[in-house]
Length: 138
Length: 68
Image 1: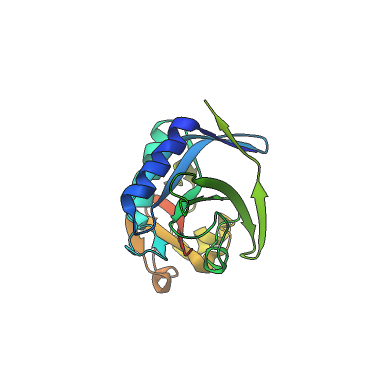
Image 2 (image 1 turned 90 degrees about the vertical axis):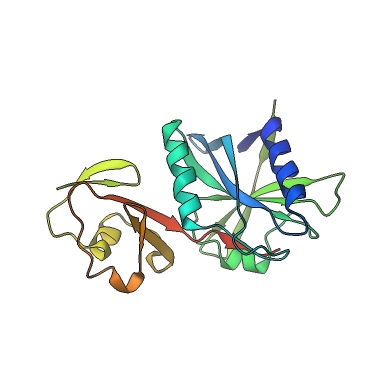
């Protein structure tokens, strides 16, 4: 299970909409308890690709975010990106570029601007996709 | 020597190179990892020839990107 605070979810949605027509992206940090992951910080980072169909995060932005997580006693849980016009599921490119099997890959679809959908996935060996149970908490 | 790896201080023998550290740290998919030393990105071709010094701070970063 992975949890995210409703306020943090709204931050992702707001940022993703502000990035339109480009994809929005960033990292998520938090704490782990056994198999459960609790997102406690979301990072809204620049989409280095500035594209509506691709995203990438600059390593320097990654480092800065990771250092901020550590300063708060958090660890990197994964990343997130938006799908402006497609559903909340990993694309072939998302799967191919999922190099870290320990990360959660959160995908926020805003194809329905009034009804965003967030899902979280794990990807093993850049091939096997598992959807995580995502729980929104207050 | 003492170096910091992903935020944790560790002891390693002098003369340790980046490629050996990647192996010792059991980095998953090392061909796809970006290594930084003191926030400077080390090119993959330089892994074998780059020696770490005491006090260095090393990070392993995976490419974060995708499509839609």
